[in-house]
Length: 338
Image 1 (cartoon, rainbow, N blue to C red):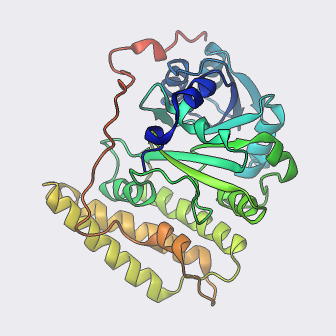
Image 2 (image 1 turned 90 degrees about the horizontal axis):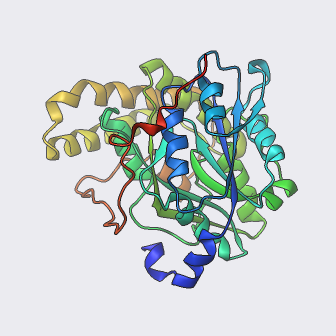
């Protein structure tokens, strides 16, 4: 579904008149933060309140944020959890709609915020989240993960609570009813979305609200990320499990899928080692995070773990919008005061 094609011009005009808070969680993100903040300034929605939640950066992250007019909220590294940092940012926010973005993402189009906020014209929508794509320099397997998780078709009323706070928006009044879980090691977004759907609200996936997400993780980083997310998943869904058979079956099936897609793209030889390395770390980390006995089936498990289908061709939405030109416009690199 193309969300914009079924949205009236009048509704889009109203959205452009909206305002929102934008919460960015960061730790030593000077390499990427300026690009995101520059992309925000290029948006069709101009009335934005930017809040940076910094967890002890020792580089120029805070200085860059201040150059762009962001308010800074500090959290001590020893007190950091994903949920706690978000709750601090949400408390500082003053707008009804709050956009959440990772410090190492950047929007592709100037209507990113507009598209992300558009579904909130329906009072039953609690949360929206947008498409993510990896940069050209990312692991081939990570690109496949994004293709699997974030399709090219929007979904107004998603049947499961999958979402991702690297590129999302929520109603602040609903957050006041249910704060983010500060005890989770990750997936605080999934836990909140689960509560929202159980309370009768809906989640919308907006393919047109596209960002690029930069990870640049080592093999150890990949292992640790999936391990902590599996630990969180297990806490959110106590009945879930990930056994040795799951590790072997999903590693092999995802490797097979990745190699097929790499072959189709003409990049198999260049990515042969990284495909095996990424998928082994991904599912070994998941296996180590679970260590339980029950099983979970259904669309959520499929969304998280199953491979991008062999034979499924990649495509991109044809947008009648000029992309933000970060290469030509170098203004996202501000003159930092030392």
